[in-house]
Structures are given as C-alpha cells and as structure tokens.
Amino acid sequence: MTTITLVHGDITEQHADAIVNAANSSLLGGGGVDGAIHRKGGPAILADCRRLRASHYGKGLPTGRAVATTAGRLHARWVIHTVGPVWQPDEDRSGLLASCYRESLRVAAELGAASVAFPAISTGIYRWPVDDGARVAVRTVREAAGGPVAEVRFVLFDDVAYQAFETALAAAP
Ligand code: ADP
Image (cartoon, rainbow, N blue to C red; front, side):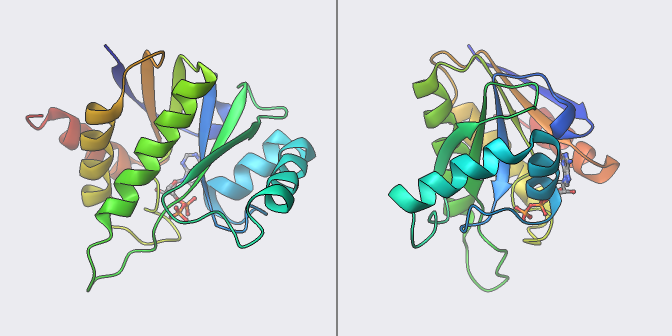
C-alpha cells in the first residue's frame, strides 16, 4: 500500500528519497520548481543533466517521460526530472500529464525509492488548470503507486493548489 500525503510548502525543503522536478525538455533548467531545484541542489544536478543530454537526450527529454539524476545538496537521494505537457485548451493532453506521474513512479520504483515528493506538474508556467491537474495526479498515483514506494507526497506551493489536491483526494477513487 502506498500512502498519499499533502504538504503545503516548498518542494526543495523536503526530505524524501526522490524529489520530482517539473522540468522542461532541455533538462538545462528553467523557472518555477525547476529553477528552485537547481538553485538549491547546486551544480551537480545540472552536470548530471548535461551528461544525460549528451548520452541519450540530445533532442530533449520527450514530454511525459522521466529520468533520474543526483539530488546534489537537496535532502534527497535522487531528483526525477519529468516534462509536463503545456496546457492546450483545444486538445486533451491529460494522457501526457498522467504519463509524467506514472513514469516518475516507475523510475522511483526502479531506484528503490520509498518516498517520492511531487509538485503539481504543469500547473505553473505550463498553465494547466490546477483542479484538473490535481485530479489527474491523484488518479494516476492511485493507479500506479506500489512496489517499494511507500509514500507519495504532493508538495503544494499555495493555498489554491493545496485545496485542489485536498478535493481530488477526498473524491471517490
Ligand atoms: P510547469 O512548467 O510544469 O507548469 P512550474 O514549476 O512552473 O512547472 O509549476 C508547477 C507547480 O509548482 C505550480 O503549481 C507552482 O506554483 C508550483 N511551484 C513553484 N515553485 C515551487 C516550489 N519551490 N515548491 C513546490 N511547488 C512549487
């Protein structure tokens, strides 16, 4: 059984085996969670990302996929970088958003991570409506969690996101 918990706060302050980064496909950093993780985690994360780019992802990490690096100075063993879809009002891209959570959990399980902290992927710079993003996140984690992952923690930066996840969790599975 995997326990799902909600935390109001900054994902870079979390103690967890794996911290998920809402990355962009370049893997070279950006704003939001991505910028905060690289700032706080230090240059070792970017160095690993550059190595991954050179060896596997010269064209970028595709949307919906996930890869792990060191967590540098964060209180974690790994950062799992996943690329969320940009919200498109005229196209249902929720399969790609679900894939971010599923693939991140698959990578976490492969690594043997017991605890995984997720931000609300795509709900910032990528403009996904947070209520819907929360529903996709909770549904997918409920379906996909298990194995060595005993705790999935959603780390929400503001009240609106926290409420959205609380509502999604309270809804019938
Ligand atoms: P994306 O590009 O996938 O939309 P963002 O990093 O812009 O990713 O935002 C994803 C979500 O994370 C947003 O809800 C944003 O408010 C939130 N967020 C931004 N910084 C942090 C942080 N340090 N810790 C946790 N959540 C954060």
